[in-house]
Length: 514
Image 1 (tube, helix red, strand yellow):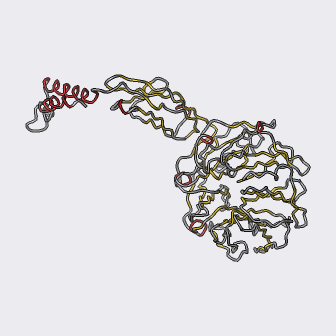
Image 2 (spheres, one colour):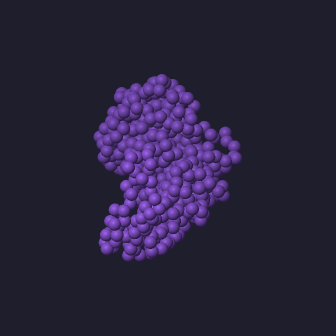
Image 3 (cartoon, one colour):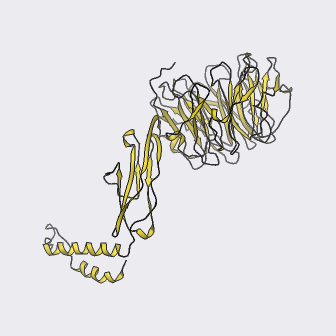
């Protein structure tokens, strides 16, 4: 401001009538002279504010966005400080937007009609300039859910498990909210059947505080109700919650694996001996030994103490995954090593003994693996496997050769991501008969997550549009489930501290489903 203008401003202000309304005593209506003095004051004020300003210079233009329906978007512009003060006017497709006169333009609950080109005109007393456009594209495959406790409570979500624990026909969600270093309460969200969820706040499942790392639903006592196992680290005992059938659980402390201390990474249910009862395999972190617990069929478990795996090991392992890769009718298990050692593939012989097999390329790599998932992506009747690896090492897709071995498919089959990938999940999200793949990528890097659409011809396309692949959260966990019973897969994504989780509802298409 030029301070030589201040005396003029003062004189102008002194001549302005103090009031202009007839209702008040001693208040005279504003005459023409008063109005002229007010106009002069405004002109002097503008002059004082803009004297010496440079013409506006934009240093940061609006960015492009590709989001899902329901997302919130904020366009922004940054102006060189020497250009200020300034006014702003946003346009969509060259038409001025009403009341869009701030440096930021926020669009909430985005719909396809809002797609277009957005730019802003910045003006001061020396001139004006219009920004480069920022483009908004809206993908209608999914709707991003932005309300409700699942997506509004920040925390650390390292895992998730979908399961209809109250048998009402609507799948519910359990979110693991712990870490090795931090104790916290896990979250159980009950599906209300109308597209919303209610956070459960009573009972041990929802109120126990622990260093949890993983959880899995399974009806271990064959009473028709899902029970829950929660793996804990930090020297705490694991937790087994038996479903009582009335919406509540009781903590089972007598189970041998529940009392197992140490640093359990995860537990996975699987009936390895084909006796109709779910058994449990636990993986440990650091120096904790992995272990197998056999279900006795009477609500109790016995730890398998003989060396049924043909090898003793300890180390930093991620969840094992059960799957009958050789189609002999019993479950085999793939064990994921996070250290610089090979992964393990154990073949179930059917007599209670597992044989370590080379499995071809699937087990010889030392890639710092962090997660894996079975799926018959090529529909040839045997299980293939995707392995997610640590940052910079590249993920890997292995095709089952049908002879007990796997071959790594070349990078063009599945466009390579060098992010810090975590626990992947397969799901045919568009009901075209070919299973697709979602990979959370950003535990430490904040990279976008990836969604791969399988084309049915041995190749995948990396999806580039929508919030699923453009929200750069520090994502770790994910899980597909049809939570609204609409016949298509919806998706939950768990993020790290300080960030809210993601929930995406599929909008479906014309394809049928069973």
